[in-house]
Length: 167
Image (cartoon, rainbow, N blue to C red; front, side, top):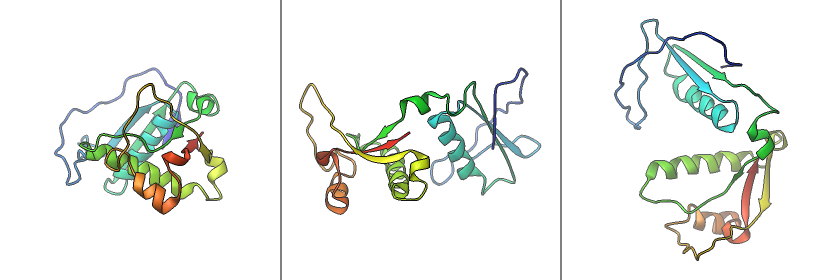
């Protein structure tokens, strides 16, 4: 994976529509040279996590993958570095299984690193907090992601103000 500031010049773009794979992920359409080239704009948490997800998803199945991240600023000068990030279970639309899956993956990943030796370097910490609403928000096991799991299995959840901080 390459990180660099933007440069002047064109790039090759390939059109093509691939069939979806078994998991719903579009299959890559490779140019004649066989190298999948991906450009991600931005080196904050969204840009870097996008580049990493693309790399992790396609590197095992492609002979050649070139992922490049272009940005005008890098750590410690990104908005991500200044603003930090909070992640918490939230009220979700249960009719969107892909969103539920992504959120579960994010939660599992952050929680698995929370007590690791790298947690401080990753900026992970468990903090308490409250969400304040202008109107009452009904909470049920169906609308609150992982509500029952957090409260019973982890002893941590929205009622206790559990929030993961990732900076």
